[in-house]
Image (tube, rainbow, N blue to C red; front, side, top):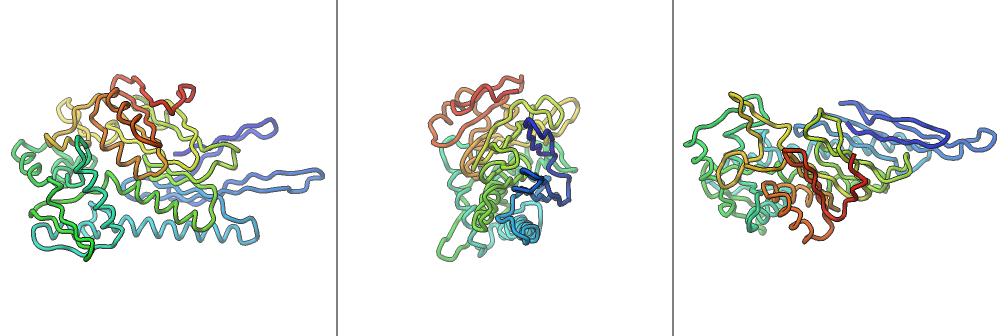
Length: 357
């Protein structure tokens, strides 16, 4: 749940944005001399459960005329229609999704796909083949073998892991840009775009809103946040809380001031399987087929594009904190905040220590 807080000398209030599966309005009215309304700001927000998370879109309508509320509701209608389209396009958990049609045809024939699905698979393959990358969009067989995060999660035996691992080589993803087709060359291969899709979708939603002249908005896809402009209600950048992995949900260890950027967090502390006193998290090692052995409880990437945040949280997960930060410092326009299993906090040079709680 996202908290927007504004405090000044004459008006102190705290506003919660927003309950699940609901639509609401948050309004600020500025009153001048003789009680005349000088200006009015009203954010409109809507939430639902989709893609395995609670999704909230909050925006300031592009105008303040009499059509403002209708315009905002239409924008939200369009955004949620896009979200449903993208969910149906990229989901690895819906047997009827466009992505699953590619998986069903593995080892049989190429599948024509939507250009956006082709683009994301192309990006994913490229990132999966990067040296020392922990990202691999072909891990679908392993994800479906472990099922961590789902009700039917279990510990597979060594033979099951070895078989699934044999089907995860991204070099067997064959792409034809001329015909816009995808072919998985080995039967049993499965793509899983969960490490990329939310970032891609957040960027697309932001592009749409900006094309409609929205200058202030927050797109929260659950662990993936993209903002447009600043929080005009509070008169400052959006304040994005970073979850303390050792504490109950909603307890933050940092608040990052963000404008026109994205914040993506990935961690081992929520999606877990506990069996006989042992804990298995959902981030799988592309080399061993088992949950990655890591010092990290979470990694947060701050970047201009949300897709970049998704890429780097996954590519770097499993690195030691100092090595991870050294890699981040080599990249342009990204920063990182890392929390280890023993609750130590590391952060790159672009993050001020004063932001830590």
